[in-house]
Amino acid sequence: MQYTLLILLQLFERAALLLMCLFVLTRLPRFKEIFQKEAYTRQELAVATVIFSLFAIFGTYSGINVEGSLVNVRIIAIMAGGILFGPWVGLITGLISGVHRFLIDIGGVTSLPCLITSITAGVVSGVIYRRISGERRWIAGIAAGMACEALTMVLILVMAQPMSLGVDIVSKIAFPMIISQISVGLIVMLVQSVEGEKERIAAKQSKLALDIANKTLPYFRSINPEALRIICRIIKEDIGADAVAITDTRFIRAYVGVGEDYYVEEGEIISDETKQTLSSGEITIRNNDTDHTNPVIKSLIIIPLKEKGEITGALKIYYTKAHKITYSLQAMAVGLSQIISTLMEVSRVEGIKEMANKAELKALQTSINPHFLFNALNAIISSIRIDPDKARELIVNLSGYMRHNLELTDEFIDIKRELQQVQQYVEIEKARFGNRLDVVYDIDEVEVRIPSLSIQPLVENAIVHGILKAKGPGSVTITVKDRGDVVRIGIRNTGVGISEETIERVYSGSMPENKIGLYNVHQRVKLIYGHGLTIQRLEQGTDIYFDVKKESR
Image (cartoon, rainbow, N blue to C red):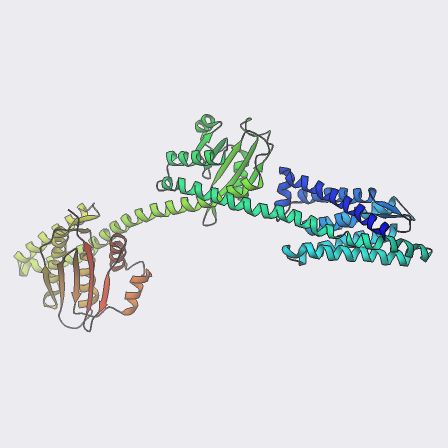
């Protein structure tokens, strides 16, 4: 028993040495990045295979000779490699170390059993990697390692000649070999602790990315070269880079840091790395770049900027020292690029929205002019012979109405001017429809500026879609009422009531594009005052109103 315990202690010593070597590797930046990843490249898998194959071969050479058998930690290295890096690492490590064990002792009593169980351990470790969740792999590794060593003992008993030799060997090495597999769990937990450190680093880098986003947010309100330069400067200082650049798909929009003068003079994107990123949409990393356009640059990472899935540019981070692009920096840069993409998209949407509001207002004006011009001219022609004075009055109203539209440039105008245009419009319509249309004005004396073209479209809507669609005459009442802090502007008609579906479409923003009048006013009033139109279907007709806040004096 004492001899068995001595073997067990010696096995734990060798396993501890293996654990120490692995710990040192996890502290080295280039190897640490491999242990922190969840997905591996072929090159990284090859590196992992070499490392664990060397550990397994070392385990064989450092084995303890017991009756021609080598008591060693080879299975521990195989199981750990497969559980941590997947089936290919486990299988290849098991095959290499198993064949090595067989070749150094061809014909040995345990050489063939060790070859078989080494390959078996590689296969089983790959299954654990694929089927067992991360938090349970350490205990699964211990159980599988013990099972593989137990299989080794069974094969020794079956294959040993004479059988008494097999029994003698197994009686001495079975217990320490099986119990030593606890080390598999220790190795797995060690590497998983490095993965936990990866999560802490990711959280730290996410906070850094958010801090940078908060600092740069004000400069995204108006994207121009100077704003982008300030954004690059903030990123450069906060992450300790030597140079930072932002590009679109053709030109360098801003560059701050080493080589700044050179890039400002050139302007157009010239590096192959940037072109590759823009064309492929994949991150480009160079950690020891000797062929870069600027010979001072040794490390770089280029991340594509995307808006709605389309590549719109790139964020480029440069260092003058090699191997500066660590996993943590890469995670932070990716998160930062996503934030920048979102902020640039929001900024662009806001700009488009502002231009759209102006364009929509102009479109509303220009759509009114041809519509009224045709109908008003017909009304004037009809009045010329019958009532020349009425014709002259209509011409004055039409010219005033048209002049108002053509000269309208401000988004806000005095309510008296808006009402004057409404009155000119109403007189033209009354001339066309005669006794079918009655318009009542209930106007308080108020001093307030309102969004231009906010009353006339509502009056037109009341006449065209309310009064004229009903049989017989109808009336439209235009009210402007002083209600203390606000002025309430309302248009009520006695015609065909608005449908609930149309009301819902206005509120939900699903109005057809060719019916922009009512919806346009609703959206503009809502954007300015926080609440749009209030639309009510009456027993006979429709009531629409909105409140305008008085200007503080």
